[in-house]
Amino acid sequence: MQIKFGTDGWRGVIARDFTFENLSQVAQATMDWMQREGLADQGLVVGYDRRFLSPEFARRVAEVAAGNGIKTLFCDEVAPTPAVSWAVKQEGAGAGVMITASHNPPIYNGFKVKEGYGGSARPDTTALLEQIVAYNQSHERLVRSVPFEEACRSGLIVLFDATTGYLRQLGRYVDIDLIRQAVIPAVADPMYGAGSGFFKRLLAIEEIHAEVNPAFGGRPPEPIGEHLQELCALVKSGHYRVGLALDGDADRIGAVDEHGDFFSSHGIFTVLLKHLVERKGRSGGVVKTVSTTRLVDCLAEKYQLPLFETPIGFKHICALMLEQQVLMGGEESGGLGVAGHIPERDGILMGLLLLETIAATGKGLREQLDEVMAECGSFCYRRIDTHIANDDKERLLTQLRTEPPVKIAGRLVSRTNFSDGFKFIFDNGDWLLIRPSGTEPVLRLYSEAGEAEMVETLLRGARQLAGV
Image (tube, rainbow, N blue to C red; front, side):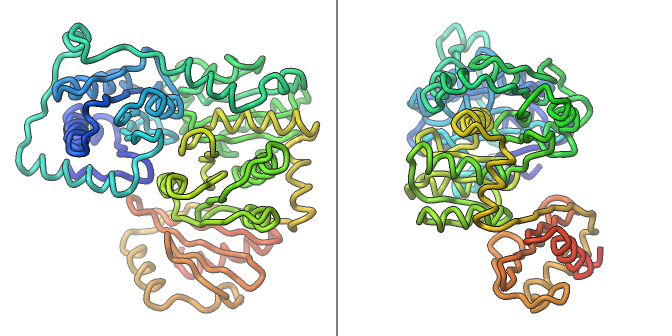
């Protein structure tokens, strides 16, 4: 089959696409790439999450690395993606592989590549990996491997603790003592994922859904409002002041505010950016994806920080963090990263920073966000995903490329951004993004405006334009 890397890695349905045979081919291509780039002598870090067969898939990657003479540090237990990424940087490894499908449904698993800087593989790297896989398949390239136990005995595979060093780094970055002294009633939902227990290792935080459950309770481990009703109810009960949620591999963050309402990634980005600048004295550029709130723009202008906008996918943010002096980067899906750590999404670190903002200000998340909106103006946001037949999707793409509308829902389009999907921006800054999925018959519609009614109006206009 043709192997394609998405926004962060290759993913597929277990036993249909994500098989040991296909995984072996991707692993062999990764070892070939490491050898081409002169990275093989630096070794490889391999980690895995709690998904079905993740440990076994990870062992297979390590066996292929051993077969190619590449020493592997193999995580001795389940680890979050940011812990594996930190280990790559800390250990000076040539690369890392994380077996995870992140927030995808339980039937999926995946293969993430981390480069030596401790972040997602850059687009050029994943494109090269795809080419190597295709070449190897067409030339019937032999997958080289050594059985796991044999490789352990020879020293080519070494069991490795990836969590202790990572927790030490978190303790350096965040004022844990300040948070402890504030005694914030908090509850976390790791959604049965690899982040289970990590907040508790540093702070006295209660957790729900922390046990092993490869079915993730029958829902995708994605920290969005519709999946966090139990967490919201716990905070609404009055026993907690804040709720924190992680996705399946703990590189994304979700939150619940002091009122028990879902607190989106847009609010998290805004509150943390203010905290980093005003209370921690940090500076640098700000990177956001095309589907992220204008509140970030407002703060960047206020603090006179350079602002960059990228296509969706943290790998694009990572690339800028490597090229520029970037303070913070983030995306609508809850992936956020900060300077002084690794150029990588880290849901656990973001959760700790949210607690630090509450401890430092004495104010809840919603109160802090309201303060920003009082200065910048109110913003309402909504995203909807709707089914669209592939033929209709292609017709829509052609129409938007060749004859983009000058008016949507009766409003004149002021400017456009077609770097990732089709973003239409209006004279007061309200915007609408139409973004078809590249792999599914799905149309994603995003809008932000000063009033909720206008958001709905723009989304209706997008539906009419698409005929869905």
